[in-house]
Image (tube, rainbow, N blue to C red; front, side, top):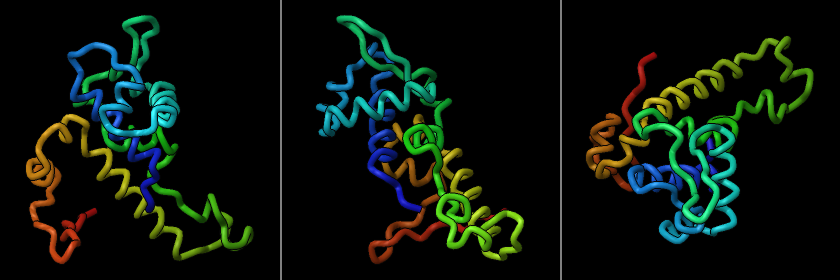
Length: 162
């Protein structure tokens, strides 16, 4: 899995709006300036988030973007899926090694692993809300079950049961 800049910037923009939920509409340029992101890229991302129902836009002198629903009702998965259309790409479908080999009619013992990974990623990202990300990093770590400190630059991830 690779998080693209569109997915990451989409999350940054949505989180910016979550922090300013009571401030009224915020322009894409304000978001870009506040987060030090390219304004044109932010506008493209905001359009995707609007189409997905994550944000709503208002036209006019006092227009801009707002979250379409509360940050406690928008998951990280929602935002990433809006920016990227999927959170994990199963290559069997998107980039088959060989058409016949990767067809769903072909018996492939690897495919279930990718499908399980996709489901686990979606479950984890779906369980983290924008409202969770409004907390301090240590609180977010505790909230999502990452209480271990980084070890040698790597996080000790909890084992998922499923």
